[in-house]
Image 1 (cartoon, rainbow, N blue to C red):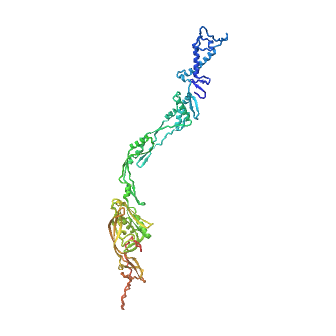
Image 2: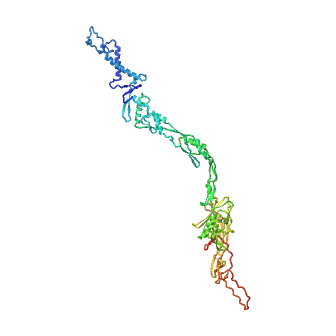
Length: 640
């Protein structure tokens, strides 16, 4: 029914205009029509004038009353005048019109035989519009309005208002808004310490948009216009959609294709590489940072590719498209790790001594340290100080400095390097290495305890030690100008269990030489009467050396006697000038240093002497050249 036109549309498109208030009620109309037809049929003998006179067929007519011989007089009946009798045509025409109209209605609505007679006139229903207005309307009109092939206003699918659209139009509009890839596919593979990201780009996405559209379209559709309660409920709900929209959302399924191929492609690259494993190893030594350079160990892995594929597939099947799958592996562990080598190898022993401020001496010490620094000794090899440091020459970078030679101080190339040999000797003792050769000085040095020094002299006097361990060792040596320290360190396999060694000296005997040990020697360049001290006295000392073992907590666990050093007594040595004013040389008493008087001349015989040659002036004796000791300290702090 079209509410605005007020016409009922029949199947062929024609319309019948509704009758309004002038039509009588259906029941009265039927009664009237039935009564008229019945009377006409049941009284065929009635005349038209009888009917017009008010007698209706079927009415009861009283018989003439009979009395005892008398009849009741009847009222006179007026008769129409001849020639002026009323005609029945208008009545017949009116009745025929009613019959015709009724027939047309029955024919139009019931010609197919499908419409029951009682539904020819449809019932009204009371509905509530979107604005709250209550309105009465024909059920057929409500059903026709709800039976549209388009979505009701207020239906929203995936954010698209599809009201007024057909199903196909709605599908086209909605699918435009749906993302091609609604989920980020990012599953990572955790392989040992490495994270791999496969490229899962072959993905099929299926939306259930068609099903959602069908469901949304059927919402509030009445099954029949006969069920007035359902029709009313559906109509009211459709009206409310205009106020409160009904949202529908599509769901989707994702199928990731070629999972196995993708996972295998990523993992197969590492199958061979990861199957290899190796122990950590020492490859070099960093002198600047003074530490071993270690090649890290490599753990081997047998990769379980099949389990990795299964893990990824299960993740996708659960509807999860991001995450990390740990690749199962069988670990092949190395036996030696970097941490183990760091713990086992490093500094074994070290020694530091302090030099004085004599520049040339410190130059020689620095040069000797530089020549030693970085020396590597394989197991069984012997370190020779003279071989490593080399001959002390100007070309080799050495300068003249104080040395001990012939029991006194002299100047010679390489003076002071005995401090380097003594420092390194103590580092070797603390590293528990085997000492092959070592010599003490003429007297103790001031930079290290008695019994712990080691003198050297090119080429005969040397300091040597052997690497009697099972591993190579590295010798590090340097002179630090900031604090004038001479440093020696030995790196290799550490002593067991965190143990370490310190060196100690013990003086077991000592006495100071008296004046009787004083020596006086001629100075052939100094005038008579002048003296100078060439050497002060040194005590006679016997010193023992010990290697003292400590545990990692600093507790002494052993004290091992190692060596004994004897320093003989030295008295003062004083030079006495013997040059006279006339250029001749005087003699001295070597026990007292006094100048001896000149001898008395013999008496002259008066005879004429035979001619004799002139007596030459004696030349001063030339002392033997001293043997230089290159490791001495200048007076008053002697260098040795």
